[in-house]
Length: 400
Image (cartoon, rainbow, N blue to C red; front, side, top):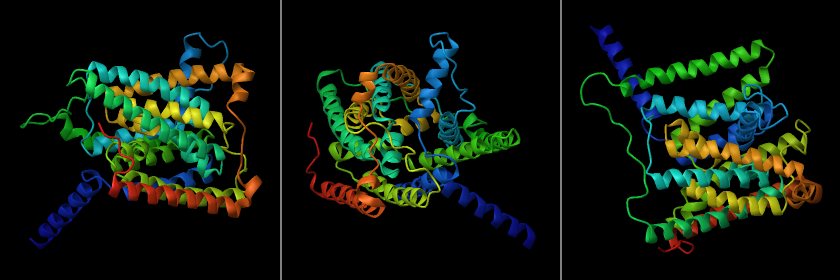
């Protein structure tokens, strides 16, 4: 009897642990810390974290496959850009299954149209800024690039403009045109797909591990590791509901600063880690310093900011929400991939347009590593403080 009771207690402990991990959302603070740590680990392993580069590779491959691009394109299963984005989508999908949150969610026609427009704008902005909110802002700032600061400013301006549009939409378009259909809750009795989803989630994770091992056996150890890094990013972001758009939109819309503070904290960790890796020579100084200061970072950030507010998700946010089954964000990701591929090609074939984007500015070349890190940490601390102050005063909140 005691053995049976012991087994029963153990099962209860495991169930509570599973519930705490996959049925209760993780703290946004925890998400920020984990993303910062994973950003440094990914950079130390092979390359910095990014999303837009993977989406661009998908767009390049698509256009090449249908004969529009006359030149060959790297396969999505060997491109490191693509592998990181696939891992993010894979991890979000697995996490959504494990938490029983995966369901195909349709949206009204207006929202689907906003997914198309938002995806196109994000693709154009990412091409101009050298990356999306991850590569052009988060990773560029971590890599000590001044274009990351320019995109940060642009994202704030774009988010403000996007909110002004949303408020205009609420006032002038028919009510009920927005929103999304609630997820399918399933029947009240009998076995439903949602009851099986945790087991499917385990299989999805096992599949990712098997794929990583397969990469290693084919002399693609770096790619296999990046797939697992992307997988971890997807799980963390999905469990924390972490979307960068909230860090730029919410201070204007609701006044909330929780995500903004988490982004600031995450970036502090990432900046210190990247600086250490570059200063010690373990990674090249020029890595992920986009040629986008100032025009590309600022204007690209504005365009991207408007797009992410319209789509309801940033680069990484759109991907992980697509992994949850949200049709609008799937559409946004698809048009993001196509537009960033086309606009990047246009930039590459136009010398004048390419020069217009700006220059590569690696801050330690002008300020030394010490003062660069101090300056960026102060900037992020100011971001943290202003977000907290605005939360209590609603100074920057836009009224309807």
